[in-house]
Length: 68
Image (cartoon, rainbow, N blue to C red; front, side):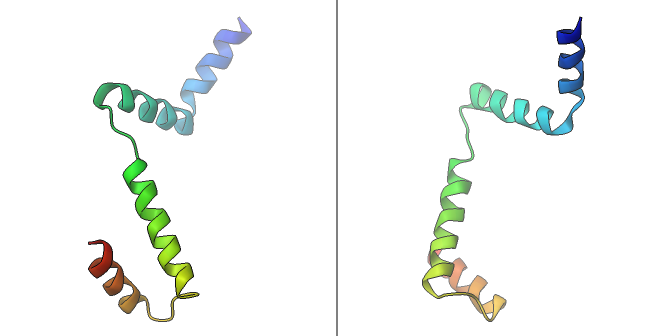
C-alpha cells in the first residue's frame, strides 16, 4: 500500500512529471536536448574567453554573428 501511495505522490510532483515527459519524448521522437546543451557550452566558453561581459547588446551581437 505504501508503494502505491509513494507512486501517486511521485506522479503528483510537477518536476517528476516533466522528467518523465522528457524521457518519454526521447522514445517517441528520438529527440534530446543535446543541441541546446552544446550551444550553452559554446556560449559559456565564448564568455570565459573574454573574461566577462560589459555590454550585453554587443555580446549578443557577437554571439549571433558567430553561432547564428
